[in-house]
Length: 383
Ligand SMILES: [Zn+2]
Image 1: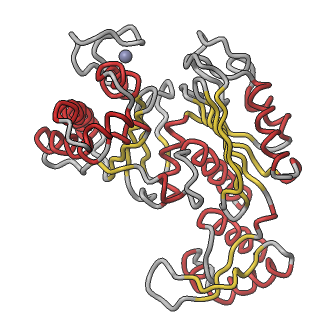
Image 2: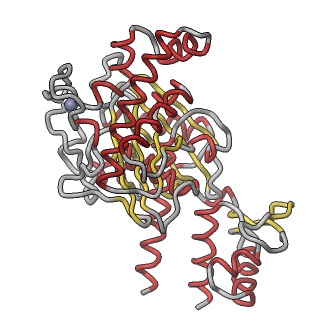
């Protein structure tokens, strides 16, 4: 019984980062006496610590001494494997980001890195922070391709990938001597929203992510919807205009062909950040171009709201750097097409990034996926 209570408290702190005795006893339904006993025991064993300041509770109630996991009890490694670059985030057990790095390994944005490249940059990061590999509790990997959620196998066999065909989870797990979870990058970004609190576990949410490609993820009541071929939410290759320009998928006029970074930069002839600067300094032509792209996003959002009708619709990815006018135009179009739809919101990656280093929701989301998996395994053990 005591062990179960302790596991509940550890899991709660792993997910929420910080709490107080009163809040823990309320939100874990353990009751004050049981929670206090469990906390005392965890504290005596050096697994949790008092931070020295007061914890503000999430609901009403008096603040109490703040508790958190001892940061040195374990490390989580999140890796975003993209086409051309790779991003790593190292977080401690208290969900604090302690290090991150980004590497560009290819100027051709069509290649994923090899297995040995991924493991070598990960080992490098651990080495730099003096992180003992034995303390790694788990490794979450986010990949820019459809992934079989059970095996971690990448469903894009045309890619010349040395870890696409074998058993990638087992291979990485053997290397890191820790559990490994591989997920699609957009799914990971959506999970990051869930853990940041923007999306709650009683809601349905859709995340549209516009970067080099356009992807989407659907979360219903805290669970990712994968679908038959792990492509649920893959909205990028729905045609916006079937007579439009050719798309890399072989189709024509797909949403991705209007909303990805490469499409926007190619069509409008400047970088995303320069376009934003020009719009801000009053260039009416660019302002109009950005509004038109916003209307395309609004049309895609209407497709999403007609099919899924989510409580929360979030957009993220580098294209969001086009600014407020882009999102406003999208919301205007969405309201015209579907007056009952939930308005589009910005991704909240900044809010969960305590150190505010860069937009790395997929790598963070991969860590949250691990933590969530630990929780499910713990629940299964208790049954
Ligand atoms: Zn396409």
